[in-house]
Length: 441
Ligand code: GLY
Ligand code: MN
Ligand code: MN
Image 1: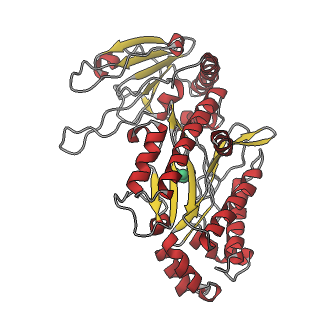
Image 2: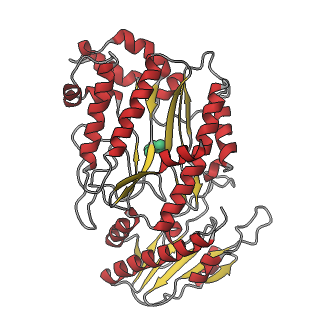
Image 3: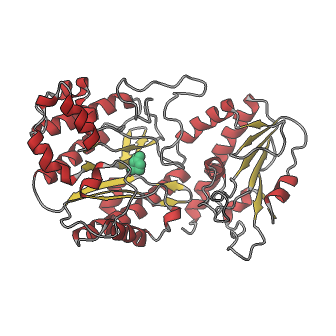
Protein backbone atom coordinates (compact mmCIF):
# COMPACT_ATOMS: atom_id res chain seq x y z
CA UNK A 1 0.00 0.00 0.00
CA UNK A 2 1.44 3.45 -0.86
CA UNK A 3 2.38 5.67 2.06
CA UNK A 4 0.26 8.73 2.78
CA UNK A 5 1.62 11.77 4.58
CA UNK A 6 -0.38 10.62 7.63
CA UNK A 7 1.40 7.24 7.50
CA UNK A 8 4.73 9.04 7.48
CA UNK A 9 3.85 11.07 10.54
CA UNK A 10 2.48 7.98 12.29
CA UNK A 11 5.59 5.96 11.44
CA UNK A 12 7.91 8.67 12.77
CA UNK A 13 6.01 8.62 16.09
CA UNK A 14 5.99 4.79 16.09
CA UNK A 15 9.74 4.61 15.58
CA UNK A 16 10.36 7.13 18.33
CA UNK A 17 8.33 5.07 20.80
CA UNK A 18 9.78 1.72 19.78
CA UNK A 19 13.39 2.96 19.72
CA UNK A 20 12.88 4.51 23.17
CA UNK A 21 11.63 1.14 24.44
CA UNK A 22 14.63 -0.60 22.88
CA UNK A 23 17.07 1.92 24.33
CA UNK A 24 15.61 1.58 27.84
CA UNK A 25 15.77 -2.21 27.61
CA UNK A 26 19.36 -2.06 26.35
CA UNK A 27 20.37 0.19 29.24
CA UNK A 28 18.74 -2.17 31.73
CA UNK A 29 20.66 -5.08 30.25
CA UNK A 30 23.86 -3.00 29.96
CA UNK A 31 24.14 -3.58 26.24
CA UNK A 32 26.20 -1.37 23.95
CA UNK A 33 24.80 -2.75 20.71
CA UNK A 34 21.77 -4.67 19.52
CA UNK A 35 21.74 -6.36 16.12
CA UNK A 36 18.44 -7.60 14.69
CA UNK A 37 18.58 -9.97 11.75
CA UNK A 38 15.71 -10.06 9.21
CA UNK A 39 16.18 -13.83 8.83
CA UNK A 40 17.79 -16.27 6.44
CA UNK A 41 16.44 -17.89 3.30
CA UNK A 42 15.62 -21.54 3.97
CA UNK A 43 15.62 -24.38 1.50
CA UNK A 44 13.79 -27.70 1.31
CA UNK A 45 15.93 -30.66 2.44
CA UNK A 46 18.65 -31.49 -0.10
CA UNK A 47 16.98 -29.18 -2.59
CA UNK A 48 17.51 -25.78 -4.17
CA UNK A 49 13.86 -24.77 -3.69
CA UNK A 50 13.46 -21.94 -1.20
CA UNK A 51 10.72 -22.01 1.45
CA UNK A 52 8.56 -18.87 1.66
CA UNK A 53 10.48 -16.26 3.65
CA UNK A 54 8.90 -14.84 6.80
CA UNK A 55 10.68 -11.85 8.27
CA UNK A 56 11.72 -11.80 11.93
CA UNK A 57 8.86 -9.82 13.55
CA UNK A 58 11.36 -7.85 15.67
CA UNK A 59 12.87 -6.59 12.43
CA UNK A 60 9.45 -5.71 10.95
CA UNK A 61 8.59 -3.85 14.17
CA UNK A 62 11.24 -1.26 13.35
CA UNK A 63 11.73 -1.44 9.58
CA UNK A 64 8.81 -1.52 7.10
CA UNK A 65 11.05 -2.57 4.19
CA UNK A 66 10.17 -5.32 1.71
CA UNK A 67 11.33 -8.80 2.82
CA UNK A 68 15.10 -9.00 2.40
CA UNK A 69 16.79 -12.08 3.92
CA UNK A 70 20.15 -11.40 5.57
CA UNK A 71 19.45 -7.72 6.24
CA UNK A 72 20.40 -6.30 9.65
CA UNK A 73 19.44 -3.46 11.98
CA UNK A 74 22.25 -2.19 14.19
CA UNK A 75 21.27 -0.14 17.22
CA UNK A 76 23.82 1.62 19.45
CA UNK A 77 22.93 3.93 22.30
CA UNK A 78 22.81 7.58 21.27
CA UNK A 79 23.34 6.89 17.55
CA UNK A 80 20.79 6.88 14.76
CA UNK A 81 19.68 3.38 13.80
CA UNK A 82 21.51 1.67 10.96
CA UNK A 83 19.87 -0.50 8.35
CA UNK A 84 22.23 -2.84 6.50
CA UNK A 85 20.04 -3.97 3.62
CA UNK A 86 20.87 -6.95 1.44
CA UNK A 87 20.03 -6.75 -2.27
CA UNK A 88 21.65 -9.80 -3.92
CA UNK A 89 23.05 -9.56 -7.37
CA UNK A 90 20.64 -12.26 -8.58
CA UNK A 91 19.38 -12.85 -12.09
CA UNK A 92 17.39 -15.98 -11.15
CA UNK A 93 15.04 -14.05 -8.88
CA UNK A 94 13.90 -10.45 -8.52
CA UNK A 95 15.92 -8.96 -5.69
CA UNK A 96 14.10 -6.82 -3.12
CA UNK A 97 13.79 -3.19 -4.15
CA UNK A 98 16.26 -1.03 -2.21
CA UNK A 99 14.58 0.89 0.64
CA UNK A 100 12.68 3.95 -0.60
CA UNK A 101 10.17 6.38 0.84
CA UNK A 102 10.03 8.88 3.66
CA UNK A 103 10.56 6.26 6.39
CA UNK A 104 14.12 5.68 5.16
CA UNK A 105 15.05 9.18 6.42
CA UNK A 106 15.04 7.79 9.98
CA UNK A 107 17.82 5.29 9.24
CA UNK A 108 21.40 5.38 8.12
CA UNK A 109 21.11 2.93 5.24
CA UNK A 110 23.76 0.92 3.42
CA UNK A 111 23.02 -1.67 0.73
CA UNK A 112 25.10 -4.87 0.37
CA UNK A 113 25.10 -7.66 -2.22
CA UNK A 114 25.40 -10.47 0.36
CA UNK A 115 24.48 -11.19 3.99
CA UNK A 116 28.18 -11.79 4.72
CA UNK A 117 29.06 -8.30 3.47
CA UNK A 118 26.37 -6.79 5.71
CA UNK A 119 27.75 -8.69 8.71
CA UNK A 120 31.30 -7.57 7.90
CA UNK A 121 30.12 -3.94 7.95
CA UNK A 122 28.71 -4.09 11.50
CA UNK A 123 30.39 -1.53 13.76
CA UNK A 124 30.08 -3.45 17.01
CA UNK A 125 33.55 -4.91 17.30
CA UNK A 126 33.77 -4.18 21.02
CA UNK A 127 31.38 -3.90 23.97
CA UNK A 128 28.38 -5.94 25.07
CA UNK A 129 26.34 -6.97 22.04
CA UNK A 130 23.08 -8.86 21.70
CA UNK A 131 21.64 -10.49 18.60
CA UNK A 132 17.96 -11.11 17.85
CA UNK A 133 17.62 -13.63 15.08
CA UNK A 134 17.00 -17.28 14.28
CA UNK A 135 20.48 -18.18 13.05
CA UNK A 136 23.73 -18.14 15.01
CA UNK A 137 25.32 -14.71 15.50
CA UNK A 138 28.60 -13.92 13.73
CA UNK A 139 30.46 -13.76 17.06
CA UNK A 140 30.21 -16.42 19.74
CA UNK A 141 30.59 -13.83 22.52
CA UNK A 142 27.29 -12.11 21.66
CA UNK A 143 24.16 -12.72 23.69
CA UNK A 144 21.58 -14.52 21.57
CA UNK A 145 17.91 -13.60 21.90
CA UNK A 146 18.42 -12.56 25.53
CA UNK A 147 15.37 -13.50 27.54
CA UNK A 148 15.17 -10.42 29.77
CA UNK A 149 15.66 -7.97 26.92
CA UNK A 150 12.97 -9.69 24.88
CA UNK A 151 10.63 -9.80 27.90
CA UNK A 152 10.85 -6.00 28.10
CA UNK A 153 10.31 -5.54 24.36
CA UNK A 154 7.39 -7.98 24.32
CA UNK A 155 5.54 -5.66 26.70
CA UNK A 156 6.14 -2.75 24.33
CA UNK A 157 4.84 -4.78 21.38
CA UNK A 158 1.59 -5.54 23.24
CA UNK A 159 0.55 -1.89 23.11
CA UNK A 160 0.01 -0.79 19.55
CA UNK A 161 1.11 2.62 18.31
CA UNK A 162 -1.03 4.77 16.00
CA UNK A 163 1.02 3.51 13.04
CA UNK A 164 0.44 -0.11 13.99
CA UNK A 165 -3.29 0.54 14.38
CA UNK A 166 -3.38 2.17 10.94
CA UNK A 167 -1.74 -0.99 9.51
CA UNK A 168 -4.16 -3.27 11.37
CA UNK A 169 -7.15 -1.19 10.22
CA UNK A 170 -5.98 -1.45 6.62
CA UNK A 171 -5.33 -5.20 6.94
CA UNK A 172 -8.85 -5.55 8.34
CA UNK A 173 -10.44 -3.44 5.63
CA UNK A 174 -8.72 -5.50 2.91
CA UNK A 175 -9.49 -8.80 4.64
CA UNK A 176 -13.18 -7.91 4.80
CA UNK A 177 -13.25 -7.42 1.01
CA UNK A 178 -11.97 -10.99 0.75
CA UNK A 179 -14.64 -12.28 3.12
CA UNK A 180 -17.44 -10.64 1.14
CA UNK A 181 -16.13 -12.21 -2.07
CA UNK A 182 -15.74 -15.60 -0.36
CA UNK A 183 -19.35 -15.62 0.87
CA UNK A 184 -20.56 -14.75 -2.63
CA UNK A 185 -18.50 -17.61 -4.09
CA UNK A 186 -19.96 -20.01 -1.49
CA UNK A 187 -23.51 -18.93 -2.33
CA UNK A 188 -22.69 -19.57 -6.01
CA UNK A 189 -21.72 -23.16 -5.17
CA UNK A 190 -17.92 -22.81 -5.47
CA UNK A 191 -15.42 -25.37 -4.13
CA UNK A 192 -13.12 -24.63 -1.17
CA UNK A 193 -10.31 -24.07 -3.66
CA UNK A 194 -12.34 -21.58 -5.70
CA UNK A 195 -13.60 -19.77 -2.60
CA UNK A 196 -9.96 -19.36 -1.59
CA UNK A 197 -9.12 -17.97 -5.03
CA UNK A 198 -12.06 -15.54 -4.76
CA UNK A 199 -10.67 -14.38 -1.40
CA UNK A 200 -7.17 -13.85 -2.82
CA UNK A 201 -8.47 -12.09 -5.92
CA UNK A 202 -10.51 -9.67 -3.81
CA UNK A 203 -7.64 -8.76 -1.48
CA UNK A 204 -5.04 -8.58 -4.27
CA UNK A 205 -2.44 -10.46 -2.18
CA UNK A 206 -0.42 -13.57 -2.95
CA UNK A 207 -0.88 -16.58 -0.72
CA UNK A 208 2.67 -16.13 0.62
CA UNK A 209 1.75 -12.63 1.84
CA UNK A 210 -1.14 -13.79 4.03
CA UNK A 211 -0.63 -13.49 7.78
CA UNK A 212 -1.49 -17.20 8.14
CA UNK A 213 -2.72 -19.95 5.80
CA UNK A 214 -6.38 -19.26 5.07
CA UNK A 215 -8.82 -21.82 6.51
CA UNK A 216 -11.55 -22.39 3.93
CA UNK A 217 -13.87 -25.21 4.93
CA UNK A 218 -17.19 -26.51 3.65
CA UNK A 219 -19.63 -28.82 5.41
CA UNK A 220 -18.04 -31.33 7.82
CA UNK A 221 -14.58 -29.81 7.16
CA UNK A 222 -15.73 -26.85 9.29
CA UNK A 223 -15.19 -29.15 12.30
CA UNK A 224 -11.39 -29.12 11.77
CA UNK A 225 -10.19 -26.05 13.64
CA UNK A 226 -7.27 -25.24 11.33
CA UNK A 227 -8.47 -27.13 8.25
CA UNK A 228 -5.73 -26.79 5.62
CA UNK A 229 -6.86 -28.83 2.59
CA UNK A 230 -8.85 -27.14 -0.10
CA UNK A 231 -10.97 -29.47 -2.18
CA UNK A 232 -11.00 -28.48 -5.82
CA UNK A 233 -14.51 -29.91 -6.27
CA UNK A 234 -17.56 -28.59 -4.45
CA UNK A 235 -19.49 -30.99 -2.23
CA UNK A 236 -22.65 -32.50 -3.70
CA UNK A 237 -24.72 -30.36 -1.30
CA UNK A 238 -22.95 -27.29 0.11
CA UNK A 239 -24.43 -26.68 3.57
CA UNK A 240 -21.98 -24.49 5.46
CA UNK A 241 -18.87 -22.36 5.04
CA UNK A 242 -16.27 -21.49 7.68
CA UNK A 243 -13.61 -19.11 6.42
CA UNK A 244 -10.87 -17.94 8.78
CA UNK A 245 -8.64 -15.67 6.69
CA UNK A 246 -6.86 -12.36 6.98
CA UNK A 247 -4.88 -9.90 4.91
CA UNK A 248 -1.56 -8.17 5.56
CA UNK A 249 -0.44 -4.57 5.69
CA UNK A 250 3.28 -3.87 6.17
CA UNK A 251 3.70 -7.04 8.21
CA UNK A 252 0.57 -6.59 10.34
CA UNK A 253 -2.25 -9.05 9.78
CA UNK A 254 -5.98 -9.25 10.33
CA UNK A 255 -7.51 -12.51 11.62
CA UNK A 256 -11.18 -12.76 10.68
CA UNK A 257 -13.60 -15.69 10.70
CA UNK A 258 -17.11 -15.89 9.35
CA UNK A 259 -19.53 -18.80 9.13
CA UNK A 260 -22.46 -19.07 6.73
CA UNK A 261 -25.29 -21.53 6.21
CA UNK A 262 -26.71 -22.14 2.75
CA UNK A 263 -30.30 -22.51 3.96
CA UNK A 264 -32.34 -21.48 7.02
CA UNK A 265 -32.70 -24.07 9.79
CA UNK A 266 -31.20 -25.11 13.13
CA UNK A 267 -27.61 -24.62 11.97
CA UNK A 268 -28.34 -21.15 10.56
CA UNK A 269 -30.04 -20.26 13.85
CA UNK A 270 -26.92 -21.42 15.72
CA UNK A 271 -24.84 -19.07 13.56
CA UNK A 272 -27.19 -16.18 14.43
CA UNK A 273 -26.90 -17.11 18.10
CA UNK A 274 -23.09 -17.22 17.80
CA UNK A 275 -23.05 -13.73 16.26
CA UNK A 276 -25.16 -12.44 19.14
CA UNK A 277 -23.04 -13.95 21.89
CA UNK A 278 -19.84 -12.94 20.09
CA UNK A 279 -21.09 -9.34 20.07
CA UNK A 280 -21.87 -9.58 23.77
CA UNK A 281 -18.29 -10.72 24.40
CA UNK A 282 -16.86 -7.94 22.19
CA UNK A 283 -18.94 -5.41 24.13
CA UNK A 284 -17.27 -6.57 27.34
CA UNK A 285 -13.76 -5.79 26.08
CA UNK A 286 -12.23 -2.99 28.19
CA UNK A 287 -9.08 -2.25 30.19
CA UNK A 288 -8.84 -4.33 33.35
CA UNK A 289 -10.96 -7.22 32.04
CA UNK A 290 -9.45 -10.57 33.01
CA UNK A 291 -9.33 -12.51 29.73
CA UNK A 292 -9.60 -15.84 31.56
CA UNK A 293 -12.96 -14.75 32.97
CA UNK A 294 -14.16 -13.60 29.55
CA UNK A 295 -13.09 -16.96 28.11
CA UNK A 296 -15.13 -18.79 30.76
CA UNK A 297 -18.09 -16.50 30.07
CA UNK A 298 -17.79 -17.47 26.39
CA UNK A 299 -18.04 -21.12 27.45
CA UNK A 300 -21.19 -20.41 29.46
CA UNK A 301 -22.75 -18.50 26.57
CA UNK A 302 -21.94 -21.24 24.05
CA UNK A 303 -23.28 -23.87 26.45
CA UNK A 304 -26.49 -21.83 26.85
CA UNK A 305 -26.80 -21.54 23.06
CA UNK A 306 -26.47 -25.32 22.75
CA UNK A 307 -29.03 -25.79 25.52
CA UNK A 308 -31.49 -23.35 23.90
CA UNK A 309 -31.05 -25.18 20.57
CA UNK A 310 -31.82 -28.50 22.27
CA UNK A 311 -28.35 -30.04 21.81
CA UNK A 312 -27.43 -30.03 25.51
CA UNK A 313 -29.69 -30.70 28.47
CA UNK A 314 -27.14 -29.55 31.09
CA UNK A 315 -27.24 -26.07 32.63
CA UNK A 316 -24.60 -23.74 31.20
CA UNK A 317 -22.71 -23.80 34.54
CA UNK A 318 -22.76 -27.61 34.68
CA UNK A 319 -21.61 -27.85 31.05
CA UNK A 320 -18.57 -25.70 31.83
CA UNK A 321 -17.82 -27.36 35.18
CA UNK A 322 -17.95 -30.90 33.73
CA UNK A 323 -15.91 -30.04 30.64
CA UNK A 324 -18.84 -30.74 28.30
CA UNK A 325 -18.63 -27.21 26.86
CA UNK A 326 -15.00 -27.87 25.91
CA UNK A 327 -16.08 -30.75 23.68
CA UNK A 328 -17.90 -28.20 21.52
CA UNK A 329 -15.44 -25.30 22.05
CA UNK A 330 -11.93 -26.76 22.39
CA UNK A 331 -9.98 -23.56 21.63
CA UNK A 332 -9.41 -20.27 23.40
CA UNK A 333 -11.64 -17.20 23.14
CA UNK A 334 -8.87 -15.26 21.41
CA UNK A 335 -5.33 -13.93 21.46
CA UNK A 336 -3.28 -10.80 20.98
CA UNK A 337 -2.86 -9.73 17.36
CA UNK A 338 -0.15 -7.74 15.62
CA UNK A 339 2.97 -8.64 13.64
CA UNK A 340 2.24 -12.27 14.46
CA UNK A 341 -1.25 -13.66 14.22
CA UNK A 342 -0.83 -15.21 17.65
CA UNK A 343 1.10 -12.22 18.89
CA UNK A 344 3.60 -12.19 21.74
CA UNK A 345 2.85 -11.17 25.31
CA UNK A 346 -0.29 -13.11 26.19
CA UNK A 347 0.82 -14.55 29.52
CA UNK A 348 3.03 -12.30 31.69
CA UNK A 349 1.49 -9.08 33.06
CA UNK A 350 4.88 -7.35 32.93
CA UNK A 351 8.48 -8.13 32.08
CA UNK A 352 9.94 -10.57 34.56
CA UNK A 353 6.55 -11.55 36.02
CA UNK A 354 5.70 -15.25 35.91
CA UNK A 355 3.26 -16.40 33.22
CA UNK A 356 -0.35 -16.38 34.42
CA UNK A 357 -1.59 -19.98 34.18
CA UNK A 358 -4.53 -20.97 32.04
CA UNK A 359 -7.75 -22.00 33.80
CA UNK A 360 -7.71 -25.74 34.52
CA UNK A 361 -9.18 -27.70 31.63
CA UNK A 362 -8.52 -24.91 29.10
CA UNK A 363 -5.06 -25.75 27.72
CA UNK A 364 -5.50 -23.94 24.39
CA UNK A 365 -6.01 -20.42 25.78
CA UNK A 366 -3.33 -18.07 24.39
CA UNK A 367 -4.08 -15.04 26.56
CA UNK A 368 -4.43 -15.13 30.34
CA UNK A 369 -3.71 -11.58 31.46
CA UNK A 370 -5.90 -8.56 32.07
CA UNK A 371 -6.56 -6.32 29.06
CA UNK A 372 -4.82 -2.97 28.75
CA UNK A 373 -5.52 -0.01 26.47
CA UNK A 374 -3.61 -0.32 23.20
CA UNK A 375 -3.83 -4.11 22.98
CA UNK A 376 -5.57 -5.65 19.99
CA UNK A 377 -7.29 -8.97 20.64
CA UNK A 378 -9.31 -11.43 18.62
CA UNK A 379 -12.72 -12.44 19.98
CA UNK A 380 -13.50 -15.77 18.37
CA UNK A 381 -16.02 -18.02 20.08
CA UNK A 382 -17.12 -21.11 18.20
CA UNK A 383 -18.82 -24.46 18.43
CA UNK A 384 -17.97 -27.59 16.49
CA UNK A 385 -19.12 -31.16 16.02
CA UNK A 386 -15.76 -32.94 16.22
CA UNK A 387 -16.08 -36.71 15.98
CA UNK A 388 -13.11 -37.61 18.19
CA UNK A 389 -14.26 -35.30 21.01
CA UNK A 390 -17.92 -36.30 20.70
CA UNK A 391 -16.91 -39.96 21.06
CA UNK A 392 -15.37 -39.16 24.46
CA UNK A 393 -18.53 -37.32 25.54
CA UNK A 394 -20.68 -40.22 24.42
CA UNK A 395 -18.61 -42.67 26.42
CA UNK A 396 -18.60 -40.49 29.56
CA UNK A 397 -20.99 -39.62 32.39
CA UNK A 398 -22.57 -36.68 30.46
CA UNK A 399 -23.71 -38.87 27.55
CA UNK A 400 -27.38 -38.63 28.55
CA UNK A 401 -27.24 -34.83 28.60
CA UNK A 402 -26.78 -34.70 24.83
CA UNK A 403 -29.44 -34.97 22.12
CA UNK A 404 -27.45 -37.29 19.88
CA UNK A 405 -30.12 -37.33 17.17
CA UNK A 406 -29.81 -33.57 16.81
CA UNK A 407 -26.01 -33.83 16.88
CA UNK A 408 -26.23 -36.29 13.96
CA UNK A 409 -28.29 -33.81 11.93
CA UNK A 410 -25.81 -30.97 12.65
CA UNK A 411 -22.59 -32.97 12.15
CA UNK A 412 -22.58 -32.54 8.32
CA UNK A 413 -22.38 -28.76 8.86
CA UNK A 414 -19.14 -29.16 10.86
CA UNK A 415 -18.99 -26.09 13.06
CA UNK A 416 -19.14 -22.35 13.53
CA UNK A 417 -16.63 -19.63 14.42
CA UNK A 418 -17.11 -15.86 14.42
CA UNK A 419 -13.92 -13.85 14.87
CA UNK A 420 -13.42 -10.09 15.11
CA UNK A 421 -10.33 -8.00 15.86
CA UNK A 422 -10.94 -5.60 18.71
CA UNK A 423 -8.81 -2.71 19.96
CA UNK A 424 -8.84 -2.08 23.71
CA UNK A 425 -9.23 1.67 24.25
CA UNK A 426 -9.05 3.74 27.44
CA UNK A 427 -12.85 4.06 27.30
CA UNK A 428 -13.59 0.44 26.34
CA UNK A 429 -13.01 -0.91 22.86
CA UNK A 430 -13.27 -0.41 19.13
CA UNK A 431 -14.29 -3.33 16.95
CA UNK A 432 -12.06 -2.99 13.88
CA UNK A 433 -13.75 -5.84 12.00
CA UNK A 434 -17.38 -4.80 12.45
CA UNK A 435 -16.43 -1.24 11.44
CA UNK A 436 -14.75 -2.55 8.28
CA UNK A 437 -17.79 -4.72 7.38
CA UNK A 438 -20.09 -1.74 7.94
CA UNK A 439 -17.89 0.49 5.77
CA UNK A 440 -17.80 -2.12 2.97
CA UNK A 441 -21.56 -2.57 2.74
N1 GLY B 1 -6.49 -18.00 12.38
C1 GLY B 1 -6.03 -18.64 13.53
C2 GLY B 1 -6.72 -18.19 14.71
O1 GLY B 1 -7.83 -17.70 14.63
O2 GLY B 1 -6.22 -18.21 15.80
MN1 MN C 1 -8.58 -16.86 12.86
MN1 MN D 1 -7.52 -15.91 15.86
